[in-house]
Length: 192
Image 1 (cartoon, rainbow, N blue to C red):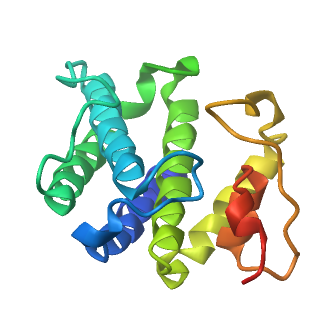
Image 2 (cartoon, rainbow, N blue to C red):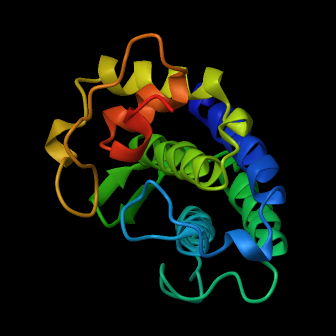
């Protein structure tokens, strides 16, 4: 399970590079995550990091998931949330908890995989939205896709608000496109 914690670290680092490339003009850009613009996706990620960290440390996050976590400094908000999130997952007892999330009560090991999925997929949503797919960590995307498929897939989570139906993507496409097609991101399933 240390592998998933290492992957969370990598996802936090990779997404920080994408977040650093955002500017005020890109905040309203549409993303492959239907009906969410860049600011909404980033806010969702930052809120999620705080909520997971609070659950792992037995504290209150202080706000709801979709509250305004970004304020006037989206990059600073992401950096602060990433620091808190990373510290929480590196607690020696982090994987001993049951985490309560929107999907229900999950053992922390399973919740870690859900969190990794959110970080990687939403990070790529942001990269594509600002036309910087080159910032996506294709190695990590490929690892996550292989893990999801090896665990029997995500079909039980397909539906509104979680994952849409899989969108076919050419085998030769980069891993980030194949991952997003797998989770139903239609925008990324087409070769430009």
